[in-house]
Amino acid sequence: MKAEIIAVGSEMLTPDRMDTNSLFLTEELNKLGIEVVRKSIVGDNRDYLSAAFKEALDRVELVIASGGLGPTEDDLTRETLADLLGRKLNLNNEILRYIEGRFRQLGREMPAVNVRQAMVPEGAAVLENPRGSAPGLWIEDAGRIIALLPGPPRELKPMYLEQVLPRLQRRSSGIRMFHRELRVAGMGESGVEQRIKPIYTRYTDVNTTILAAPGEIQIHLRMWTGDAAARAKNAGRNRTGIRNRAGRPDLFARRFFNGRKWWRAC
Image (cartoon, rainbow, N blue to C red; front, side, top):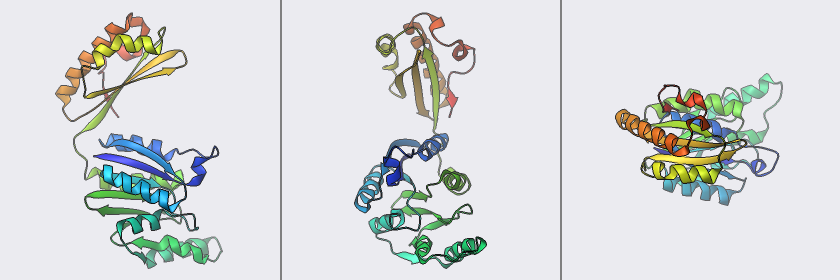
């Protein structure tokens, strides 16, 4: 299964906020064998947001969006997706009572605008949010899955782990991503590339990324497979070939060659 992540909120298109939710979601999805092929940040604009959802749903089976589920006029995720899918929004009285109860606990009357958070697209499953007023939504449409999660990480992370993860686990396959990171010192990025390219280009099922970092060059190797035998075979060949091509073995950090298995599952 392939997935896209959409972070919603104009504040994340400024220098003041950073989208950390997508990092968490990517790691969690990779553990399930779900490959994240694209991430995007979309401001609070109905046309841009609708286009982002439409393009994502045309490409992948799973779309997870964070943010835009609040009560104000600039919270457009719920309404935009419902309109795109041609689904009516219906008032969910159970959610409304829950939100009213949260305000009573604070000794305040619920503003009328919060009713928006109790509107649910037809056929959507509600993801309860005991840590905030914005419930999440799980929608299945034409073989695709859309999960709408609140933006605050303290609400998103437990909602994903408690309510989205179990649903995805029931659909997961035996495919997993296996990752290995090697580090080289004393050589430049182009020099490392020149030496190891004849090795890593042989194995099209292993994705190789070479990154420059202070004082070192990092080689990231990733492989998606459910075949343990093939994984071990390619792992041994790639590791030996890259190490030999890179030159002196001491150029690699010793901890990566201490006899343990080359690949580790994410």
